[in-house]
Image (cartoon, rainbow, N blue to C red; front, side, top):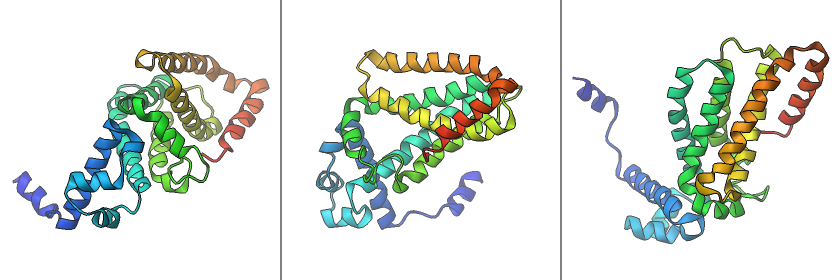
Length: 230
């Protein structure tokens, strides 16, 4: 009965929708296995058995497919983080879940990460993580960190810090990903060691937010970090 109801609620895909889904899947696999440079619209079209024109009809440029990749990675990041977030109410532990599962989702792309960075580094690039085109994918990351902070119990964090912290955490996530691109250690162990040290430092620093002498300067610092526009 359930499967019949589900089928009734989800009508079959049209031919156009099936073609779009196929093109998207081919592109995502190619980005992971071949990298940014070798994944071309022509290659995707040939793999799908359709014309280049048909491919452009569904995805005007390769960068539109990169945005699909960003969304795919972040959706997987969200799903991977949920069990860990559900298992802990400790703030730092919850943040560790978000950061570590984020790195896990990036790992399959490490061999080709410099290609993506070269294409995305310009402020005018539509695949820059801070561009308007990338806002939906970045929003998933922001929401994950917001959930991690708001779901923490017994945190010494004052309300004003709790509100501003997620934006700073997203910026740290982007900077950690940049370090990860250049990390040539086995399994990017240096990146994970840097993360662990940062989380230990955060745990030590959190009680300071309730000290009257330090509270205002720390709030100003947090506001400054958040002002970069993430």
